[in-house]
Image 1 (cartoon, rainbow, N blue to C red):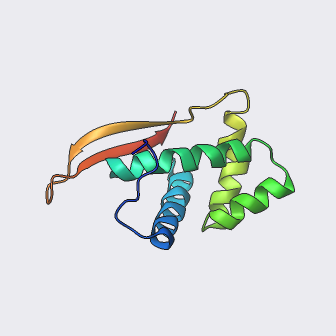
Image 2 (image 1 turned 30 degrees about the horizontal axis):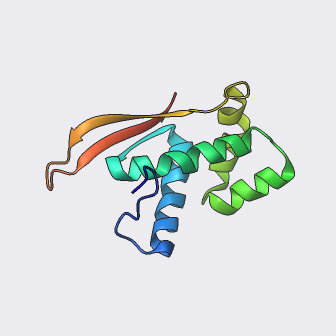
Length: 114
């Protein structure tokens, strides 16, 4: 399996809903702690949305708004996050491993903006 394309033991609709809510939470807070597998799948989604935010056109705003759950996340993406990376060619996020979850020993990680 290629990195970043995991199924996360969910069907397509559940996986899409999970990634939409995780990316919305990520843009609202700047970083989130989740499982390592979810962080690896979330990274390309978030990076594509940041690249979309660098355009700042009406079409780009509508595409981001159709994916993100909260309008505040769209505003933050286009007003604060994307302008910071205007000259940056990519690699907007980092994943930091933080250990294992106590209940089931699942590897945990923090995904944050660089």
